[in-house]
Image (cartoon, rainbow, N blue to C red; front, side):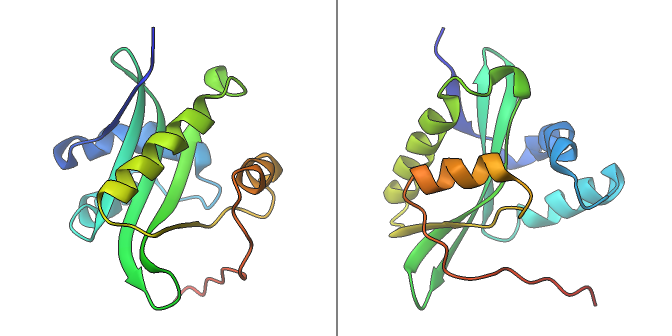
Length: 141
């Protein structure tokens, strides 16, 4: 059976929390994640989901904006596919769908950040023709 790729409705955004928690290398509580995602859906943020029938098995946050160096762009965020489904080409198919969706919204570029220790993602993004433009810095205020 083919997988289903679709945008998760804003009113269902909290269904992604268990998958985001698997990426939660930065120790953010479930309560804080729930609050933040409710706010994020009001700020040019959408989330794409991968479903195996009715079961949500993958997610990819999508931020839309216009950047002076890239034009209208989509920033990919918190990509996760359940480990039971990894290594089978699903990520490649998911990103193909994501790129098509972004182009339909008028985007000219895709951007992303990835954790420096996530070596598997580095290989995936290199193979998908992403180029490193710089470093992402974070300072807590």
